[in-house]
Every structure is written in C-alpha cells, then in structure tokens.
Amino acid sequence: MRKIAVGLLGLGNVGSGVVKLLADNADSIRERLGGASVEIRRILVRETEKQRLVDVDRKLITKSASSILDDPEISIVVELIGGEEKARQLVLDAIAHGKHVVTANKALLAAHGDELFAAAEKKNVDLYYEASVGGGVPIIRALREGLASDRITEVIGIVNGTSNFLLTKMTDEPQPFEQILAEAQRLGYAEADSSLDVDGWDAAHKLCVLVPLCFGISIHTKDVLVEGLRGIEPIDFRYAERFGFVIKPLVIAKDHGDSLEARVHPTLIPRRFMLASVNDVYNAVYVSSHALGQSMYYGRGAGMMPTAVAVVSDLLEVSRNLLSSSVGGPPTGRVRTPKRIRAAGELESRYYLRINVLDQPGVLAQLAGLLGEQGISISEMVQEGQRTDGKSACVVMTTHIAREENMQAALMRINLLPAVVAPTRLLRIFDRPGENATRGGKTA
Ligand code: HSE
Image 1 (cartoon, protein in one colour):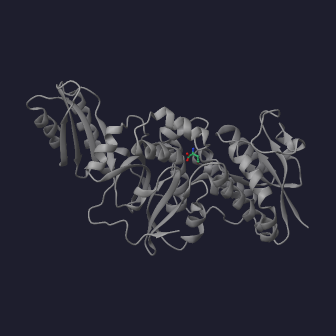
Image 2: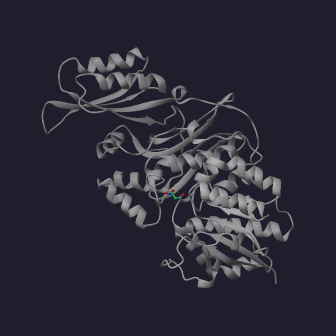
Image 3: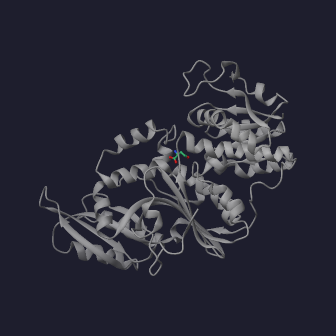
C-alpha cells in the first residue's frame, strides 16, 4: 500500500485540526486515494514542550526544518506557521527540494505569490492554497475549476470571519468591541495579531489571492483601498437600519475593462442583498460572471476544523496528482492580463456620513454647501439632538454616487468647520439602483 509522507510546518490551531481530520477520516481518505494513505511524518514547531490541542506522537515533533526538507520520503510540505518572511523561506526551500506545497498563508501569497508560483512552476511541483481564503469554503476551486470557462466581471466577498463576527455581534446587541474580539480569539477565528482582522489587512491579503484567479492580474495591498472597523459605533448600526442597510466587512474587485478596482472596507449594503444575511464567522463570495451570471459560495470562514477541511482537501488533491503522475500542471489558474489598477481617489460609491455638530443656525447649509462644491448630492438625511447636552446634534446623511477624491476633499473641509465637534464617520454604501441581488443567485 502506498504511503504519502507529509511534513507539517506548524502545530497551532489549524495544524492541530489537520492532524485531527487526517486521523478522524483516515478510512475515507484511503478509499478516496484508491488505497493509498496520507501520513504525517514530521511536524516542525517552535517550542517542543508546549501543550498541544491534539495528541501527537512526540517522536514526530522537531525544531529542525532540515529534518523535513532533507527527508527524501516526504513529498508534501504543509505550511501553517503563518507570517511572511520565515514562511517564504521555508516554502522556497521546500520547492527547491522538489516538494509539493500546501499553504493556508494568505499574507505570504499576497506579498510573494508571484515569486512562489514561479518557483513551483520551474521545479514542476504543486502549490495549493485553498485554505488561504474563506476557511472551509472551496472558493479557490470554484474559481479555478468551476468558473474556469467563464469571464468574471466582479467579486464581492465577506472573507474575514473575525470582522463579520464582530459586526454581527455589534448589530445584534451593543457590546464592547474588545469583549467580542476576545471571544473571536477564544474561538480560534482571529489572527495571532488581531489588528490584521480589525484593520482590514487580512481581508486585503485574501483579495490579493482572489484577484489573479478572477482577473488574471497580480495585485498587492498597496493597490487596494483598505479600511478597517475601528470607529464604527453602535449608533451607526441603528442609522444603517433606519436607511434600510446592514453593515458588512466587504472586499470588492471589479473589472472595468481597461482598469480594475480593488477595495476593502466596512460597507452599508441593502438588507435584501444576499450578503446581508451572511452572519457571525460565516464567509461568502458573490461572483458575477458573463455566462453564469451571479453565484455565491458560502460557509464557515475561520476556525480550526473548517480551515483544516480546506488544507486536507488540498493534501488529497496533491496526493491524487502524485498517484496519477500529474503533479506540476498549471494548478494556480493564474493567467496574465495586464490591467491598470484604479487609484483610491478614482473609486466611486454612495456614502454614509455621521457628523456631530453644534445645534445652531446655518450648520446644515454649510454641510450641504461643502458637499455641493465637490459635486456631491445628498440622498437622505436625518438630524437628532444629543439628549445629553442639548447643544449638539447628530446629522446623518447618505449621498448619491460620488468620486472618492471629491468625498475626501469635502470631508476634510467638513471636519475643519468650527461647528463640527467630533471627527465625521464616513462609511461607503454598496447599492445599485434597480439591481435586486436576491434574484438569480446560485448558492454553491
Ligand atoms: N483571522 C481569519 C478570519 C482566519 O477571521 O477570517 C481565517 O483566515
């Protein structure tokens, strides 16, 4: 019986899930591989004595990367240590040693994807990365295989489980932000550095992984408009609801023909839009393509076992490739179509503004004037007095579509007005007049 030997780099949350899933499903995995088995031969860790989430044979544990890289029997290396530079070096070394690689590391792929895929292609080895986006949702396979025959025009996703969990909890009942984040950490959703989740960078990394598959162009986080969740307050959820929206942490990439837009920010979306009902740690990616139309891919986007499912499924696919001697094909689905990436200032949206002002004559006229000077038209507006002091008021407005550079110019001037008593909260609205996104979507 053939054994496929695997070297695991990292035994944290996801690594432990991989060990558990391989053990739990050993029989069905063997069946799916026509009798061959997948066996973890060695596990690289930083601290050998640390308490683990799963029981592993201590003989497998090592602090020496070369005991994996130099073992000729190990054919697949699974990188789950996270981070960029050390992971990059280990993956390049594994490829140089002719090993196939499975990784869940979105930060690594966002920063060094081109280099790693080129190295893998040169050495004729597989590099699989399903777990890097969407946790257990097979979005990479859907894009690489299911939609390979179609032309994608737009991708809108909720791809960070922690921020969706945070926003869902904040919508349901006001709770301190730090308390919800601590719960996300306890549940194994958040990154070791949770600011990657909260400030939008994890989602941006994932968008950088999706864009080459969808649009045949490599992008980097510097090309993406990235905003996180800080500064959103319970009152914003109430106003969003009043205007018919919910707030979701979106990634958006859209092909404009000559150029591409890529952005990550908390967004007001209409309650009727399918992504509005994607809650808690769930992720979903809503894809528009020429022939299929709209399709949506949904499931648990973070956590030990959902992410392990994606990693182990990649392990199976590489194992199948090994067994059928078809490794090193073009696994990434990345094609090359050079395209300009739109600068942040060129992007267009509707906007939500929450402005705290002194309740005095002429203030509304000043606000409307500054927006008007930038060609920005107000769509809806409410004003409420602050019950606490009776002197200030909260003005909340939504605008029609405007250009980001005009909105930023207006915002700067609004915040300089003597009557404006606190920094204005700006959120973007994703809303297309006439488009009913609940129709025609296929949920996969
Ligand atoms: N911290 C990530 C998230 C883990 O919350 O989505 C999965 O990539």
